[in-house]
Length: 150
Image 1 (tube, rainbow, N blue to C red):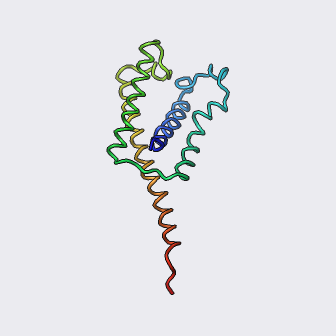
Image 2: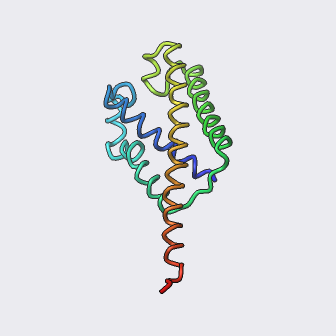
């Protein structure tokens, strides 16, 4: 059941990280980190997630909950993560992601809200892809099982 949420969160991580990185890497992964985190590990955290999620989607059928329940859970997890980010900032005075340091309160709210909308859209995309992959495969298997009429 929880595996269905790996798709929207994993895709969100890849999309957001590499979009911000392409714009200005210092906003999400400062060059200083290269001294501590090797490049292959960065790709392991921010690139390889996507192929593994796609492989998992192709090899394992997922029974999605009702759309309302799935979106509610996805949004709840997203809000919990945002609250954690804010709590860490409150306690340490530092944002986990440098991009948040450069945003004012209003822009941060818009950024977080946009992130929740994006992860919700990705959840729906995962639901559609899962249905397409497995309904197509099921149809092909049913065609093979039909006796041939002569």
